[in-house]
Length: 110
Image (tube, rainbow, N blue to C red; front, top):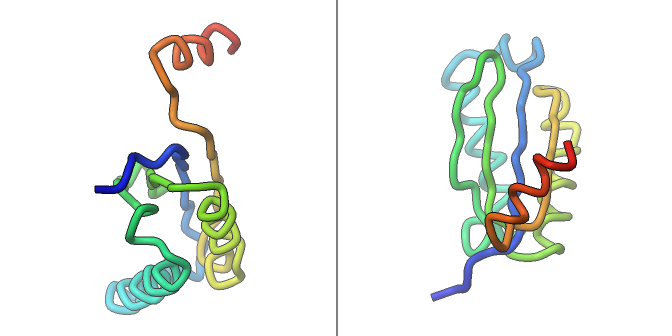
């Protein structure tokens, strides 16, 4: 069993008109193609998408990422024209907190 990944990423996808113009079948095909591209870069094993939710007009995703190299590959994939033509992207990446104090410190420093 692999150890827990140590990096988390939250990615917000805000649909652009090009996405909104696609019908449901074409959206599904586009998403499957993107997932296949991520798998080519090693996602789906130790690094993977673990959660997604529609929030207002956005789709928010949460990723477990095994290492810095996988993080860089994920960010590169999100910057591809195939993605940025369909969505505005906002990415937040960071090390998974080791304990409650790390989480609390983020709020104290806000």
